[in-house]
Length: 193
Image (tube, rainbow, N blue to C red):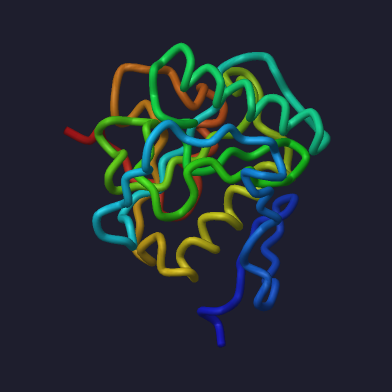
């Protein structure tokens, strides 16, 4: 059945991988997450219509689960201790190790872009992608994660893909990554009001 197959772009070639839509997702306990401050707010009506892509915006990169988990913890610490949020802002974080790190997860309201928080899954790739692309492992993990969300009925099958800058005044997800996203299926232009 085609709808249960994962389609990924790997090194410029199209591959179909049967029933293996979800990438490796490192749970909050596996990466050492702090508990959220307060009860997470549930998304009002899954499946959500948007997937919003971010970058970490700093020159901190990782290629192992240990180093990626440390950066995800630093993101969470910054979001809670500096921004005053109740948890890490993203629903998921992706490392160049090819793993996905659970942030707020599929069901909780994010704090990644006010125009989309209540109706999107926010995905951040660790690093700064102003001048370079994430590696192929990270790009594949993002594509797989979105497909996984569609198959789990967490993201609409007719979702719109956006870069963070389309919701507000920011350069996120970096010029090079944003340019790449505009070539992906389901990317849609325009800013959200």
